[in-house]
Image (cartoon, rainbow, N blue to C red; front, side, top):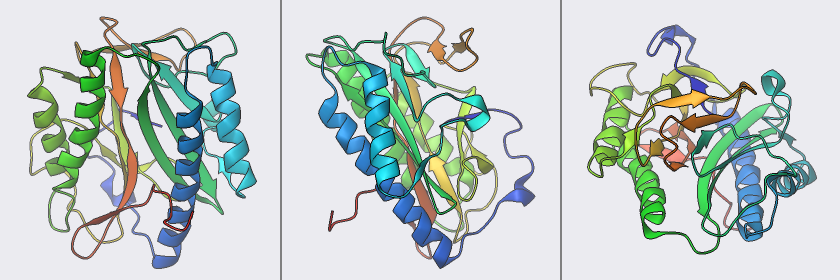
Length: 266
């Protein structure tokens, strides 16, 4: 779940560095969140409601001894964010919102396991999707991995941000600026903010034990967005499609590790 822009690179003294015990709990939370993603991926097809997808996530998360991170977070009424086509983030699941052939849907999931969170997002195609939308999904995912090339101790946080932006801009896409990634751990949203744009060489120095939710939100058109009357649903200002890709990571001695992944024995 994305964080509002706020003061980027401010209050960095609030960054927490996680112990091995904390990282192990976050790995389990990330595993559970990704299990929910996998079940939702299988269920996406024309005619399915986003409310049905929400129930799948709730059932998977709770059956593994975790709690949906988003449910009742600042009043949010669901276990996932389900954002279709021009909805960038924070789409609220509904029994009235039915997937159609050709849609793309961004699913954002958080799991809280024994007090620690895993936060991850994917955009999936529904049925027969136009090639330009598939390209948007592909570029958004790759922009995340372009950013990860700079997730090493000693680099600056904005080195990640800059790499994401530069890659997405090669395709003339808009990089959302009003919402960012964030630190993650015992709180769903921790410092620092992790923008998907900006100059390199800025922000805090990356250090071992920093845990970050990096989440490019990339629009086919303008970078500008607006929030609808429900106070959550955020759409592109020009109604162009948007895609979202997110993982929680930890900075290690010589690079990073992705925490939101399914364990090999599952």
